[in-house]
Length: 187
Image (tube, rainbow, N blue to C red; front, top):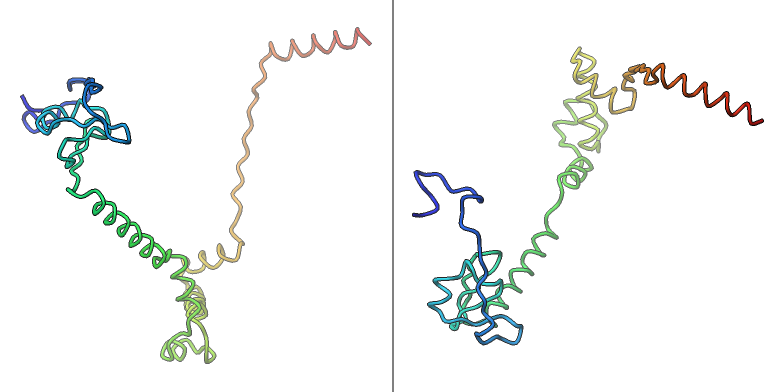
């Protein structure tokens, strides 16, 4: 029966445990990986040690019973992987974090319409415009804008909680008194 029954996949405990086959009798490549016949690979890839490859060098057993499909030309595959890695590195260099993008946008000069609307001096930045807009909102009674301003300048009210706990029992106090008495006797 298949691993999926009535749309439910068997749990790991219900699956047959993986038993590694002995491939020491098969030839090995220069990296020490066994080379098995294609048909043997197709039937047993789940139980072959990681790195085992088939004779036509198109499949590799790995990651505890998984099967990787390899290209017919290992050098070509390596070149594709290398180019993919280079493309990934180039993409990562171009990607900016949200914070970096926001910092750049905030430093740019605000639009003339926004500067005029908020009555800001010429050459004001987007950060200046946003600050002015929040101040106007807070001044007109928007408590969220006021709270954002207050918290940003560091005047957030401190929430104080006092916790009292008496962790010493009467037995602890008696032991301390007894120890203190013995310490005084030794002096």
